[in-house]
Image 1: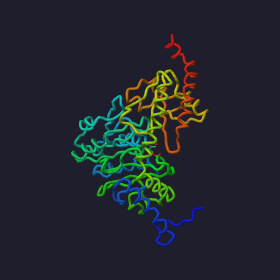
Image 2: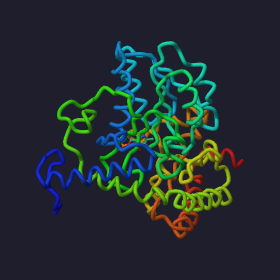
Image 3: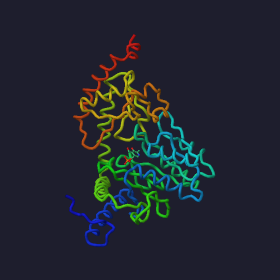
Image 4: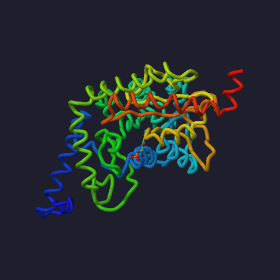
Length: 364
Ligand code: PLP
């Protein structure tokens, strides 16, 4: 049972006890970002945080619309929010990405219009791990007096995330990507910047997000950030060693495998690999049967895989995109896990290739 049962909005001792814990979490998260605790707003998820950031800016403009610049490889939390804004009369520019997977800051500069109210470009992509030049984009936005939001959900604990490193006016985070509980997230929002709230009700989060707080989720998230303040760089380095051993091991053992996206500008924990002549879904299922959890990063409907829009935007051939899987390493993974995967994956890939008409054609 949870002993601290008070409502943090209550004045009595039970409420105050819980309020203190929430404020402790806020302070730890602010310390991580190098900002003021008042600049942190809690939400129910990274998805809600992205919605609050983007709609919050647009709905706060006098006409409640305007031009938004984003990228063509954003997480659905941003992508679908932008699609919704288009439906209600906003203009959205979806910037292309090159073969390496990141946005060119020059393209950002060129797409700015008089009525641009927001630039929203993710820090690191969830499918490929590719990192965008957010600092440069922030400088462009600043010069032109336009607000800049970045979805840093994948970057927290893996890349420098202090506000001074990122330069954004609004930064999205989510608890479960740093091993805290699912169903909690939030934004850093620069002091003085007003966002139109999306959820109306009580005065929680200083009127920026109504509703009784997810107390347990917030405290757990505070603890996870607390551990990252001094520890993230070491942990990111450890994970990088495992990822590199995995990736190099696969490339050495299996022919016709391609790494999708930049290997240089990339998160330390992610690799997205195209296994040519293999159907991604079949590979995913076979890996699952031996206890290896990977993701396809594509919409999987009744056996037919839509190629990932992220990979398609990068110009990856649709057939290769269908044979692409994302592997993410994280807290708790060991070199033994990597060795196990390197033993199993080549066997599985060669078995699937034997069944593949494309592969037999290539072999002739
Ligand atoms: N943004 C990115 C880049 C993500 O990877 C995710 C989750 O996978 C989200 C947003 C959404 O966060 P949440 O799952 O907390 O809604």
